[in-house]
Length: 510
Image (cartoon, rainbow, N blue to C red; front, top):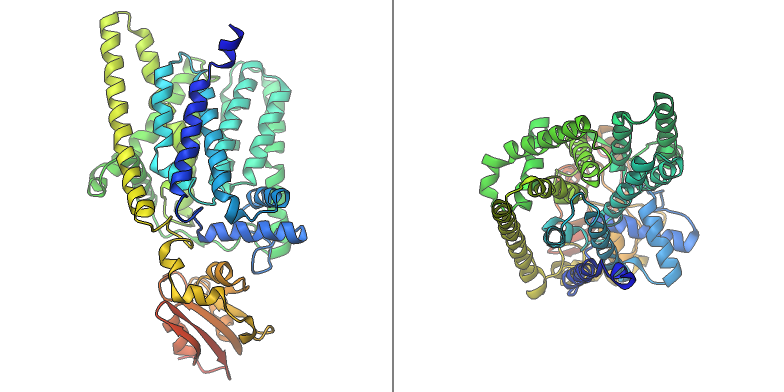
């Protein structure tokens, strides 16, 4: 009996190994995927190892992102004496395996629980294209999603016991998550909402627990933001107001779920907006139902609450602040809780059906539906694998074949830095790419929205400009804008871009 107890999660271990294998396969050609965000994290991690600071490649503190993920990479790099770009794939294999194991552990404690249900849902988690993409890149979501599940485990322990030590432990996890991703304020909100709804706590004790929980949760975030403000003048970097409406963001939100369900893009127009409304409204109804039934302390309810708070946060924040369009990466932390929220009801339904034949028929229908979904997302993953790995292209980013075979990128890798006067600033439309390929520090050309920054840029009497033709960013001033005001001298020209120098009197802008 003792041996059986130790081995009862052997199936979860097997799925964890499969998860690690999946990440290995998607990183097997060109290694871990590297995006502009990855380079920010990596440069700060390298700074930590070299100098004990968290400065990015342009020698300023990392501000657009919280500090914990680059610190996490830096600590691993310091211990292993290996660069994050080198160990990134192995790290993500471990993190994804840990995510799957934690998910299986949680589902074993659903009420009621089912081994077949767990197998199906674990397969759906491993094969989700959004999660597989996230864990193929050096991104902070790889750690944040795991922190979400850790929070659920500990906060449920608090809900069951109302012991202060579990509340403090949960708040500490939330505090670390807040300096992993700014969106972790949704974890804080999840716990705070459940504390408010908990009718088993005396009012005085509830107030005390809410204050204690809130103080601990935001402590590290406040420290991080205060440091940012003191050293850079902004708390999270320059932010532009959103240009997308609430309705449009709701449509993009629904589009991601359409993609996760295996729908084709031409179906989004008809299904995305209604699906988004149904998903969010369904979570609200489920939370109200659980509140009236006094069933707030289940993992299923924790999942529903987080999915609701996180989903609303992403849609609303995208409506007021401009960042990348809502996509699978942004919503990836919501996938597992949402999947649990919209499938675990099947276990309750089966439990209430007393007629065995009917119960078997409903169970068979659920299994067939889940197998159909799993097959759909497997085919999406297979297509991605064929295009990126089998066809030897790599994860899109700065390590894919297009960049590896780029004459311009290869020139930057071996560039003689003496061609630049060290006293003159280098600008670029992709400063992270300049650093990744050459190790040079450079600054991003101004955003069009910030008129004062643009004016100051045009007042500079001498600078270098490294321009990538294939990285057009409509939010930045472009090379044609600059050439209208500045007469640039070409230092080196390629099909993919060029290196320019400007030195001269300030011209009169037309």
